[in-house]
Length: 71
Image 1 (cartoon, rainbow, N blue to C red):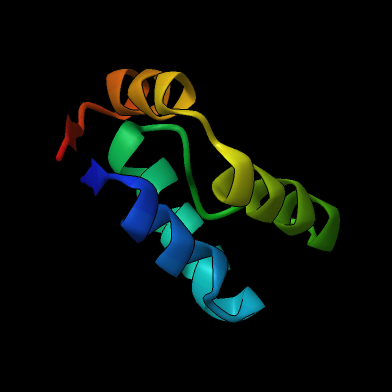
Image 2 (spheres, rainbow, N blue to C red):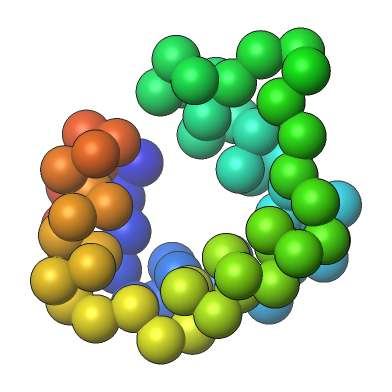
């Protein structure tokens, strides 16, 4: 998965259901998500805040954790 400011902005604009699906898929790919993996409305709010205000350093850290590439 690749992350940059533009892709993070697109993610933040997804509906709750769409964003939840993306998060679940990322978790599954990272080996931390299972059938019982849930994302609350509060979690979504925090994730949207991160996606909106993430610094380049935070994006790089996220990439490192999930094995993505910076573009």
